[in-house]
Amino acid sequence: MSINIGLSEQERQGVTDILNKVLADAYLLLIKTKKYHWDVVGPQFRTLHELWKEHYEALTISIDAVAERVRMLNGYPLGTAEGFLKNASLKEHPGDLPSAQEMVKRLVIDHEQIIRNLRGFVDQTSEEFHDEGTSDFLTGLMEAHEEMAWMLRSFLDGESFESSGTRDKELATNKSA
Ligand SMILES: [Fe+2]
Image (cartoon, rainbow, N blue to C red; front, side, top):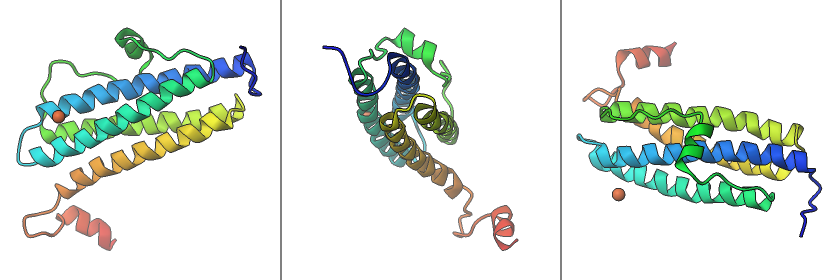
Protein backbone atom coordinates (compact mmCIF):
# COMPACT_ATOMS: atom_id res chain seq x y z
CA MET A 1 0.00 0.00 0.00
CA SER A 2 1.39 3.43 -0.91
CA ILE A 3 2.18 5.95 1.82
CA ASN A 4 -0.01 9.08 2.14
CA ILE A 5 1.16 11.17 5.12
CA GLY A 6 1.25 14.65 3.54
CA LEU A 7 4.88 14.56 2.41
CA SER A 8 5.88 14.33 -1.25
CA GLU A 9 8.20 11.57 -2.43
CA GLN A 10 10.91 14.18 -2.86
CA GLU A 11 10.42 15.46 0.69
CA ARG A 12 10.55 11.95 2.11
CA GLN A 13 13.68 11.21 0.08
CA GLY A 14 15.34 14.37 1.40
CA VAL A 15 14.49 13.43 4.97
CA THR A 16 15.54 9.79 4.71
CA ASP A 17 18.89 10.85 3.19
CA ILE A 18 19.43 13.05 6.26
CA LEU A 19 18.37 10.28 8.64
CA ASN A 20 20.83 7.90 6.98
CA LYS A 21 23.65 10.41 7.55
CA VAL A 22 22.60 10.64 11.20
CA LEU A 23 22.52 6.84 11.38
CA ALA A 24 26.03 6.54 9.88
CA ASP A 25 27.57 8.96 12.37
CA ALA A 26 25.75 7.34 15.29
CA TYR A 27 27.13 3.95 14.26
CA LEU A 28 30.67 5.24 14.03
CA LEU A 29 30.33 6.91 17.42
CA LEU A 30 28.96 3.67 18.86
CA ILE A 31 32.01 1.78 17.59
CA LYS A 32 34.42 4.44 18.88
CA THR A 33 32.72 4.57 22.29
CA LYS A 34 32.82 0.77 22.61
CA LYS A 35 36.47 0.61 21.59
CA TYR A 36 37.42 3.15 24.29
CA HIS A 37 35.27 1.25 26.83
CA TRP A 38 37.49 -1.75 26.07
CA ASP A 39 40.85 0.03 25.78
CA VAL A 40 40.82 2.60 28.58
CA VAL A 41 43.42 2.25 31.37
CA GLY A 42 44.45 4.39 34.34
CA PRO A 43 43.06 5.62 37.66
CA GLN A 44 39.77 6.65 36.01
CA PHE A 45 39.27 3.22 34.45
CA ARG A 46 36.09 2.33 36.30
CA THR A 47 34.42 5.73 35.83
CA LEU A 48 35.09 5.88 32.10
CA HIS A 49 34.48 2.17 31.47
CA GLU A 50 31.04 2.50 33.11
CA LEU A 51 30.20 5.88 31.56
CA TRP A 52 30.98 4.58 28.06
CA LYS A 53 28.85 1.53 28.68
CA GLU A 54 25.92 3.84 29.49
CA HIS A 55 26.66 5.89 26.39
CA TYR A 56 26.92 2.97 23.97
CA GLU A 57 23.72 1.49 25.36
CA ALA A 58 21.93 4.82 24.81
CA LEU A 59 23.43 5.06 21.30
CA THR A 60 22.25 1.54 20.48
CA ILE A 61 18.68 2.51 21.37
CA SER A 62 18.79 5.77 19.40
CA ILE A 63 20.35 4.04 16.35
CA ASP A 64 17.37 1.70 16.28
CA ALA A 65 14.97 4.65 16.51
CA VAL A 66 16.70 6.46 13.61
CA ALA A 67 16.64 3.38 11.37
CA GLU A 68 12.98 2.69 12.18
CA ARG A 69 12.05 6.31 11.43
CA VAL A 70 13.54 5.80 7.94
CA ARG A 71 11.15 2.84 7.50
CA MET A 72 8.22 4.92 8.82
CA LEU A 73 8.90 7.31 5.94
CA ASN A 74 8.95 4.36 3.52
CA GLY A 75 12.72 4.50 3.02
CA TYR A 76 15.47 2.00 3.66
CA PRO A 77 18.08 2.50 6.38
CA LEU A 78 21.75 1.89 5.66
CA GLY A 79 22.86 -1.43 7.07
CA THR A 80 26.41 -2.09 5.92
CA ALA A 81 29.73 -1.01 7.43
CA GLU A 82 30.71 0.29 3.98
CA GLY A 83 27.54 2.39 3.76
CA PHE A 84 28.08 3.81 7.25
CA LEU A 85 31.67 4.78 6.43
CA LYS A 86 30.65 6.42 3.15
CA ASN A 87 27.90 8.50 4.76
CA ALA A 88 29.52 9.42 8.07
CA SER A 89 31.10 12.78 8.83
CA LEU A 90 33.09 11.35 11.78
CA LYS A 91 36.57 9.96 11.18
CA GLU A 92 38.05 6.78 12.60
CA HIS A 93 41.51 6.58 14.17
CA PRO A 94 42.52 3.01 13.43
CA GLY A 95 45.49 1.46 15.16
CA ASP A 96 46.26 4.04 17.82
CA LEU A 97 45.87 3.79 21.59
CA PRO A 98 45.34 7.26 23.11
CA SER A 99 45.47 8.16 26.80
CA ALA A 100 42.19 8.22 28.76
CA GLN A 101 42.19 12.04 28.58
CA GLU A 102 42.68 12.00 24.83
CA MET A 103 39.88 9.44 24.41
CA VAL A 104 37.47 11.71 26.30
CA LYS A 105 38.60 14.72 24.26
CA ARG A 106 38.06 12.90 20.96
CA LEU A 107 34.59 11.78 21.98
CA VAL A 108 33.65 15.35 22.99
CA ILE A 109 34.77 16.51 19.54
CA ASP A 110 32.68 13.77 17.88
CA HIS A 111 29.55 14.48 19.94
CA GLU A 112 29.91 18.20 19.24
CA GLN A 113 30.24 17.58 15.53
CA ILE A 114 27.09 15.45 15.61
CA ILE A 115 25.29 18.20 17.59
CA ARG A 116 26.26 20.83 14.99
CA ASN A 117 25.11 18.55 12.16
CA LEU A 118 21.82 17.86 13.94
CA ARG A 119 21.22 21.56 14.57
CA GLY A 120 21.35 22.11 10.79
CA PHE A 121 19.20 19.05 10.07
CA VAL A 122 16.52 20.19 12.56
CA ASP A 123 16.06 23.38 10.48
CA GLN A 124 16.43 21.68 7.10
CA THR A 125 13.87 18.92 7.76
CA SER A 126 11.34 21.50 8.95
CA GLU A 127 11.99 24.39 6.54
CA GLU A 128 13.01 22.58 3.35
CA PHE A 129 11.09 19.30 3.68
CA HIS A 130 8.14 20.35 5.91
CA ASP A 131 8.61 17.29 8.12
CA GLU A 132 7.99 18.59 11.64
CA GLY A 133 7.93 15.03 12.99
CA THR A 134 11.52 14.33 11.95
CA SER A 135 12.59 17.83 12.98
CA ASP A 136 11.22 17.19 16.48
CA PHE A 137 12.78 13.72 16.55
CA LEU A 138 16.20 15.13 15.62
CA THR A 139 15.84 17.85 18.27
CA GLY A 140 15.45 15.14 20.92
CA LEU A 141 18.47 13.33 19.55
CA MET A 142 20.52 16.54 19.63
CA GLU A 143 19.58 17.05 23.31
CA ALA A 144 20.72 13.50 24.13
CA HIS A 145 24.13 14.20 22.50
CA GLU A 146 24.34 17.52 24.35
CA GLU A 147 23.93 15.64 27.63
CA MET A 148 26.58 13.05 26.74
CA ALA A 149 28.98 15.80 25.58
CA TRP A 150 28.41 17.67 28.85
CA MET A 151 29.29 14.57 30.90
CA LEU A 152 32.52 14.09 28.97
CA ARG A 153 33.41 17.80 29.05
CA SER A 154 32.82 17.85 32.82
CA PHE A 155 35.23 14.98 33.20
CA LEU A 156 37.95 16.99 31.43
CA ASP A 157 37.14 20.14 33.44
CA GLY A 158 37.54 18.13 36.67
CA GLU A 159 41.10 17.30 35.67
CA SER A 160 42.09 20.97 36.13
CA PHE A 161 41.38 20.80 39.89
CA GLU A 162 44.51 20.75 42.04
CA SER A 163 44.97 18.19 44.79
CA SER A 164 43.94 20.85 47.35
CA GLY A 165 40.48 20.77 45.77
CA THR A 166 40.73 24.25 44.26
CA ARG A 167 40.75 25.00 40.58
CA ASP A 168 43.97 25.96 38.87
CA LYS A 169 45.01 29.61 38.61
CA GLU A 170 43.82 30.14 35.07
CA LEU A 171 40.28 29.04 35.87
CA ALA A 172 40.22 30.99 39.14
CA THR A 173 41.33 34.14 37.30
CA ASN A 174 38.64 33.67 34.67
CA LYS A 175 36.07 33.26 37.38
CA SER A 176 36.96 36.48 39.21
CA ALA A 177 37.21 38.51 35.98
FE1 LIG B 1 31.54 -4.10 28.59
